[in-house]
Length: 285
Image 1: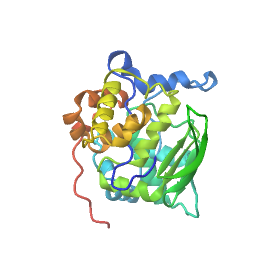
Image 2 (image 1 turned 90 degrees about the vertical axis):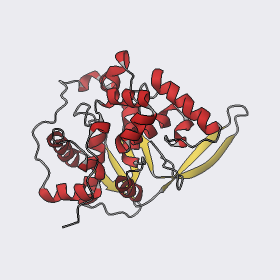
Image 3 (image 1 turned 180 degrees about the vertical axis):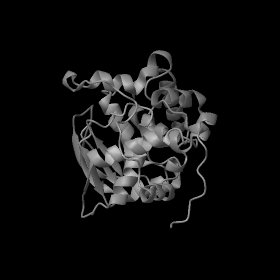
Image 4 (image 1 turned 120 degrees about the vertical axis):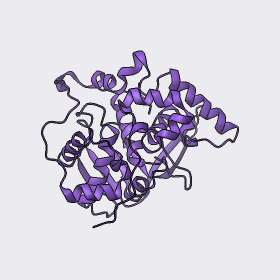
């Protein structure tokens, strides 16, 4: 996920209504190797709930966690506990990873997949965490001339196929608190899920394609948009930035882009616009 200063960088629809209603869950099933197949469940096997101090930390540091309805809380906490047990978070660039960092990342990742199978992260090998933006070397090939231009760019997040997610801790922390439609964890988890589905999720037509084209047209006209203009880069980025809004500003997204919101509800099997708004941040104990 490239960084762009004041512009919220990254914001999935999965598959669409009707035939597309199976969305991510179908994609995940189809792309897994047969030897990994086993009975699916939307609930996590028995696992310890969060400790009171862990819950308090998330209430303070992750406003999105405070919005989760009571009926979904137990399953979310089980998934967070499973993530903490199974997913390795490795510090890079001299960063020493603290338990609270793992917890903040786990909560946002598990909220993103809360409506999907509990095995959504079974192929994720781990998370690489940098203290801040990290530099990635890149090559750009001109399709007309074949000329290769070498360069690079600073990123706040990146997904390496279905293997690893790379994050900037500063952006993770800032995004979790702001609730402004920018959330690097949601963004990169959506890219990971799209990779798991073989790219089929971001390649769908219907409302997703229509909304993507509308965004591209609005950006070309220089208009302000609710959806981050970065989503006009390609359907993959449009999917990710839309998912950020879906979780962080769902009522605005539903009001301004009802067809896109309905598609995301079907894909994620969640309806965050009907979750209670976050209460005021509790004072740290």
